[in-house]
Length: 453
Image (cartoon, rainbow, N blue to C red; front, side, top):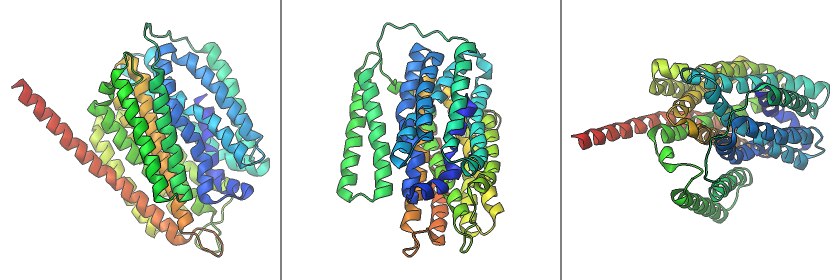
């Protein structure tokens, strides 16, 4: 099921230039096709994690898959952009499958295998992305782009039936306390307004007053959520858990890493698709998928070993190496992007760096909280990944739109250079964040020592 979900989520990436041509939309509007799924995912993931903690991961997972299947079928039959976006909204529920899978991992496997198992689950989702990346082009060009949504959806329906029948039930945790629905609504509203605002700000160029109003609304919703969670008898998110260094360090660093990687994910297919008469390569969807495939394979492999790498070499070392590799790769790509192998190598290196780093952060945080909080803790990190990728994609689309040639409407080469340079700068920012968290961690240890003395 994870493989099928990954395939459905990933078919848009190599086919995005084709979808833009078929639907007659700009790069910024094309970015919205992929980000619509992420918007729903950001809202659903924490709710799914909390419900899975309370009612059982399998029970919630099967119900979510019914919604995903409906979205996939709707996208497969979409006659226009509006219906396709609605299908993507429903498909976005699939992001909630990750925290639910982590709940099942911790309940059904020995504690000592949790780190390896969580990495393997993430790798399976990424491996599905590899399948979608490889076959999206041949399906879209041989049949139609509608079928690239239909076939993974059929696989999801079939595998969900298998999971429902064969996977052992995980009993819900006994509790006399109800669900913190005010907290659910406020957190969902905060994420929804933030994600929609992000898309509007980067894609439509809102006036400063409107941007300020969006910021005020997000801040008000977030403040209300914090107040509700502090007073709730059974809060959706225990703020004491969120305040643990392992959690908030992981959230901040994951956000920075995935923002940079989201830009790379968007910019490379666009550059492959630009006409070969200028500075691009003029590739079709199938060829784009083939060139992106090595990066997908590298990403799947790195996801599976992220937890092991952090345990062996240390979390800080993994993050520092990943940031240096990504920043150096993007800076080099800003100067050297005339050969396809340069783009392929860049995707491989950044996928490995992002996969190892984010999975290491995820496994570290997942094993740092109590078992009953696994779902909500990992879902918050999944949301952080989603928001970071969405921000990177939208920023990449905005940069290409801003650098479009008036005569043709196509992005100029300098727009891609700017995009790669910005992605490298964001990756370098994670080095600063690693340094800041190290200083603060040292201060915390010193404070504790002084208290004991």
